[in-house]
Image (tube, rainbow, N blue to C red):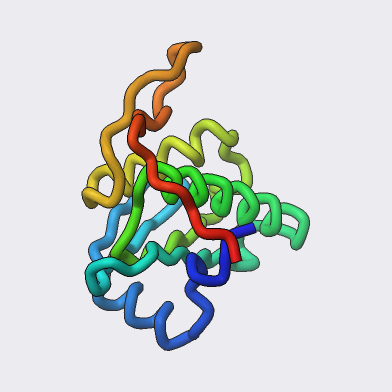
Length: 137
C-alpha cells in the first residue's frame, strides 16, 4: 500500500493532473505527469473504469499499478503528480507488459532514471543504485 503522502486523494487534484499534465499513451495505459513544488513527495493516482472488466479484474490492475508506483518511488521519483489510467486492454496485459509501459512513461517524462534489462534479460528493470527511501505513514 502506498503511504498517504504518496497518494492523490482529491478529485480536484485528479482533474488538474489529467487536464494539465503531460500525457504519455501506451497500449494498455495512459499516464499523466504534472510537476509539483520542489522537495515534495511524488503522488500517484489510478483510474480503472468498469470498461476494464469485473471488480476482480479492476482491483488486480490497480494492485499492479500500485506496485509499479512503489518501484518508481524507490527509484527516486519526487516533485510530481502521476495519474495512470488503465485502458480496457489492460485486463489482458501481463504483469511485465503493464510494468514496462508505466515505467517507460515515467522515464519518458524524466520522473525516474533510465531502464536497463534485468538479470533474465526482461526489459524494464530499474537501475537505481542511489534510490532514496520511501516514507511509510
